[in-house]
Image (cartoon, rainbow, N blue to C red; front, side, top):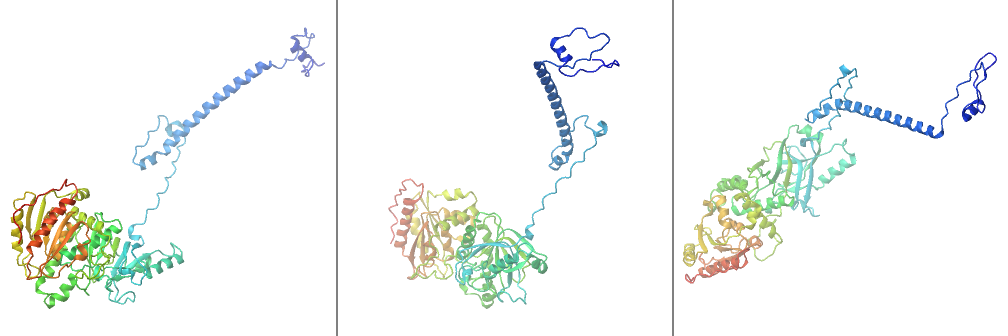
Length: 560
């Protein structure tokens, strides 16, 4: 209603307007009064419709805002991540057109600094020594029988005033351990005590040498700061190294049974036999031990040598030293660690300790037959693997090729030796009888060989195709190790009957026959020919892949 002054006043709820809205009109308003416009009130259905439309429009606006914000964020991230792509040597993504901050008025976003690279690992030259030993018993002299693999073990000349270790040692091995800042003081002391108590002790001797005090070592524990102070410059030998003191390397038999087989056994014990980076180190000292090549040269040769029968021992030693790498995988030259001239040297991987792996363990009883030994018991598989290992290294090819090779034609190889040491007076007659008996047999070939005149490769090729091997004993007879499975080695003794039986009887893959020829140094021809024929038949009966193995011996050429 209008006020007396003519002011329009909004009616309160529940009065005119409410009636006006419900009834449409109430008639004409009083003359001279202006009614207030009624508030907009819709029907309930219409109200819900308006609310829905408003909500829909708001949702669409919100969605467009989110999309715009996402596109802006992606553009900024692309700009900031360009450096990370470049660090990975990948092409940086192109920025989109119109995204130049200088033109669009945007502030250039500063890319975050790249994360710091992880700290590089310590070089191997700063690593500490560790070891893994096996075959260590609980006796006081267990170092005489243990075999060890070291990482980063160092060797130096023994200081003249050193009160540590054995005074007969010419070198000292250093076991580098952590500083007290790296681990607790108690842990450092515990590790030092284990080394000092002999947990890493070893011998460089093989066979009879293994208990010699000049070759038994207990590494000296030192901290990294101590070795850096005493020996700031050190040589590091990469790859896998084997350190040993040789025994009778002037002889082919000792080279095989007292060096190469022990080295192979030690490597195989740690799964390293197939490494191509193996380097052999021969330990050499002025205080030489018999019967090493050093001993022959420094002690015996000035006195005229061991005996005239051995000839020039030094020449023989050099020959077999030069031959040694041919038998090893990788064929790395034989090195010498000289106790009086060695520079401070650390070995990345060092195998040391192979005392019990020679043909007679730690004794020298190859000529005795009134005893038995466990030295070679259970090693038949290892001897066979060693045989294949050497053949593969010398002749090439794969291990499978060497393993599967089986001669299908017989070959009788007779070692020719007519000297006055182990020579036999009627060896030529035996050769004639063999040729007479098997000359017309297309399946049998008789070969007379002087092994020293052949290259190593030719020796290996000949012996692996031989089915019956006739030989005197001694070093030359050890070529029989490389005979094929089921072959026979017939040994003719003018002296030292059954010598080396303790090794050949345990090979497992060949048969061994002994013939006593000590009566006037003559070969009993009938017995020897019978053993040859038995060897041929035995091979045919047992060889793998031979079919029925039938072979009819010739009727002529009977022995007397």
